[in-house]
Image (cartoon, rainbow, N blue to C red; front, side, top):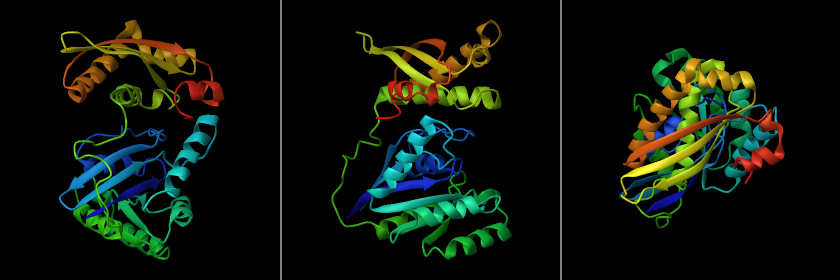
Length: 290
C-alpha cells in the first residue's frame, strides 16, 4: 500500500484548492477568484483500496506586502520541506510567466510532479509551450482540468507511484485535519469574497465567538465577527439597509447547514480593526501565525 504527504505549492489562483477539493471528493478548502484566499496549511485526504494521499494545501506564492502575507509565505515554504512529494501547480491557460517558472525552479525536488491546470480553457499551442518550459526542471508533468475532471486519474497514478510503501496515516472516515469551527469561519470568509468581488480586498478575517449545538441536537447557534480594515469596507459588507450582509449570511448559512448536517442559527457582526494584517498581535489573535 502507498501512503504519504503531498505538499501542493503554486502561485496565487493557480487552482490548488479546487484541484484538492476535486481529488478528495469533498470541500476541504474554500475557493474564490481573489489571490490569497487560502491562508492556512489545510489537509485534504484521498483514500482508495491501495493508497492514502494526504494533500497539504498551502497559501499561494505571492509578494509579501504585509505581516500576514509574510506569515503565509513561510507557511507554504515550511509545508514543502517535510513531505514525501511536492506537487507544483501552475495555471497554464495564459501560458507560464517567469514567476511561474521561478516557483517551479524554487520548489522542484527529486520527488516532484508539476500539474498544469485549467487545460479546458488552454490552447494547444500554449499547453505545448508550458510543457516545454517546465520540462527543463526534470519533474514529471501532468496536464489536468479539475473543473472538467480531465486527466485526474493519471495525476493520482503518477503521485501514487512516487509515494513510499506504508500504512494509512489517518482513519478512513477522516478527510481533513481542520475543525468544524475552522471550516465555519472559512465558509463565511469565502462568501464575503465571492459576494463583494472586487469591492473588498482580501483583508477580511472571520472570528467565531460561539459555536454551540443546542440540547435538542438539531440546531447550531453560531455567532461570528467579520473583521475588515476600513470603515468604508464595513459599509460595503453591510450594504444599504443591511441588505448585503443579510445576503452573505444567508448564502453562508446554506453551506454551513450542508457541511454540519443540521440547522444553523447565525448571528453576524462586522467590525473594523485598522490595518490588522500588519499587526503581529492581531494576526496571531485571528489565528494566522500559530
